[in-house]
Amino acid sequence: MVTNNIDKDKLKAYGCLGLFFLPFVAVGIWTLYKSISNIYDSQKTDDWKKVTAIVEKATIEYDTDSEGTETAKVIIQYKYTIHNVNYTGDKIAYGYGNNNVEEHSVLFSNVEHAKKIAVFVNPDDYSEAVIIKGMNNSIVFLLVFSMLWNSLISFFLLPLLLKKNTKINVKTYFLVVAIIWILGFTFLISEKFSIPFGEKLEVIENKPVQQ
Image (cartoon, rainbow, N blue to C red):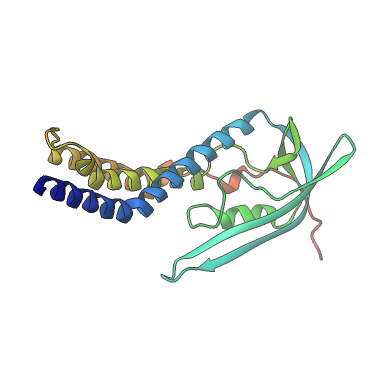
């Protein structure tokens, strides 16, 4: 009876811990899935067809969170024609969004006065297009964040999930997590690893200068 009570108490304890860590694990799984998905989507644009598009709208939106951190996002709407069929698009790049890690102002300054720009169209689906191919800082930031987040969560969860007789060197594991975090933050704050996102936009024709 005593053993059964102890087992029940353990199950309750593990259940409470599981409920506590569930939101954190869900965030880790979602960010990892989203980053891998964005990497895959960005790489498949390498062989997309380049066409000329007309810029219909170009604005930049700013937002400030509760901590006073300002984020921005460029909004672009464009129209292109393939085989006498008109298509409209607004996707700038896979993974691009409202954040403070991209060169939003550079991107907007390049497209603000643009009349025609180059876009890249999916040869299998002409309704799918992007302005900038390949990787960008938004994708890299999410991937690094996911690695940091998941390494920290695993540091707390792994000792709980392993059996008692399983040998684990906590100091070594802590050192590994610390190295991951140091490398991650170095990667994020170093300009050497920054991708010149805004400069990748190709302007074909600018609007006439108004006197």
